[in-house]
Image: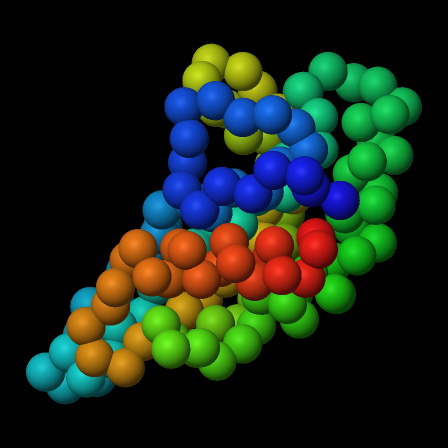
Length: 133
């Protein structure tokens, strides 16, 4: 589905691609004394330039048809925390001034203790790569 996987938002991309975005929401005291942090990460499956074409629609359809598989891959327990993917949205994403057609998967991550942002983002990208998505 995606031949390029980025563990952080790059200045430019080659499609098809997956981009793990920076967290949109952080709860740094989910339990008393930072026993746990909770974060919400966007994971973008980018299929094409924003142009309206049959090929872009068809590529979007492939991602949506695989939505349950993608959500299951992004829902795991790892050394960097526990993740759960429950929702997805079709949204445009702009990278380096170019608008792309994408499906955004919302991934909730709960850590035990203080979070390691790099480990989480690398871990999410590794899940996508390992699954061949």
